[in-house]
Image 1 (cartoon, rainbow, N blue to C red):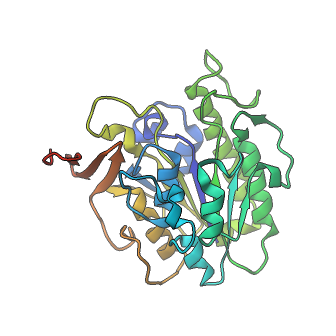
Image 2 (cartoon, helix red, strand yellow; image 1 turned 90 degrees about the vertical axis):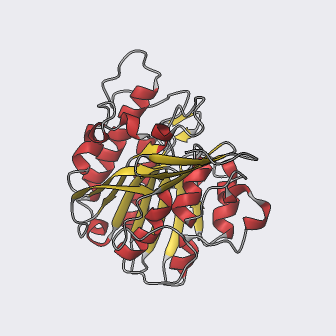
Image 3 (cartoon, rainbow, N blue to C red; image 1 turned 90 degrees about the horizontal axis):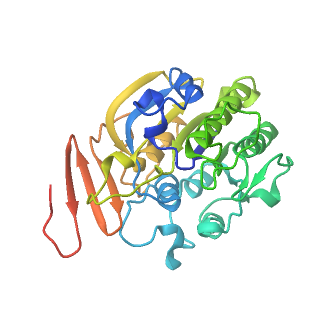
Length: 314
């Protein structure tokens, strides 16, 4: 099985083991047990960009992400569609309303068998905020669905909501700082929820036959006058599973490299249109990012930026 957990706005700036604020003890502990990509970069600054990269391997463009483009609503490549050819059943789980950002239409039109948003949760949520069911409720639903198991291999993409304004989360889970409604506290809560899920997952029958990815869709607070504010594209990416060797990998990679790598780790050999690298075989040494109308290509510590109608800058 393959499980991709997409964490809302969880930039590297909040992750202790990546040199950020020490708000992520559970993630930091899990990073000791898995393949931690310490220099992973998002392709953009919006959720649809992260979902685009992780589910389709598509490069960012200054146009809308493919999730919203009218001619990509069917017949567009996704790893769900590919895995369907190998007998996988695919689902997308989201604590909010899946019509947001056109997620539901795009995923159902491009290979996902099922979209499970909050109204379809079989485990009643304990806390529902402005954006939907809390992270722990989303993980409860994910665990519930994985426990149903069966002989059919499963691909599940699950997307969290709690780490977002107006910073709402259940009481009694973390030791909050003041003010209570802050990104620091929702990061603490997101991290707590990740820790609780994996503690339970490791004791569950599906653990032995699953590869997990925990990755952010993008960083939060992405702003500034920079042509491309590179440090705000740095995100956590951690691959876990009983057969995934623990290592701290310092190579420079992009979100687009994650889906080809996951296919390799679950033993799927195929021809596909994704341009990212399989990190089990290649070291791409570059990251690609889009910021407004600007396009960035990062290699080592050099950033090449393309702007509309202007010469490239480095």
